[in-house]
Image (cartoon, rainbow, N blue to C red; front, side):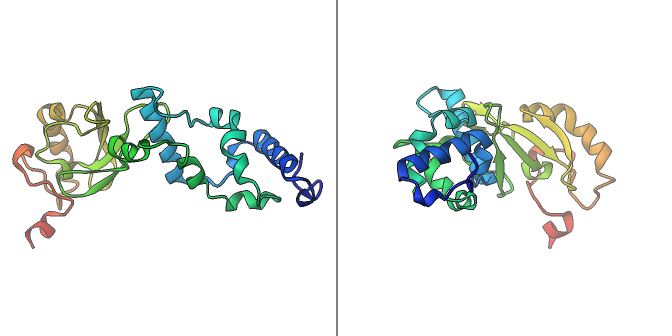
Length: 219
């Protein structure tokens, strides 16, 4: 049913909510005001559900569409036009699906950022299928780090996307130690001339991790 096919405000609230839910089912959850941060929240929760079990609720699009009456209907009192969906506080609605103490555990087990040896707080990118979260970081910021960072209380290693100073991917790995020992010498040989303003030490184990150029480091 189209939202503008009859004046919804004149319809009793219960019937109006049923009509609005049918519209969402028909057109999909894209009708709601998702943000990238909220999609990442969804992916973090779903990752923890896959890693740790059903203590974590199913917040997949499929399940959300099947349970609209439970989580969305109570918030539809002020919705009577299509544009009213954009005014919903979707973040509050969805985060309210996590019972205590899961909100705090979410940030503990699936943080949005990790601190790397350079001191940078680097954003993690999670996938709803539970694949390892991606940490895309400049190679020089990890000098001296032997072990791949982990989330989920140390049980899940991230997928490192090691970047050049131009933010281009050099290597994708979950084995940082092996990268330093076997691949880094070739990477150094290939890239130190191209990115000569940046440090490419022979010994990455004992080099200072940095996001700066060599000149900025020495100043």
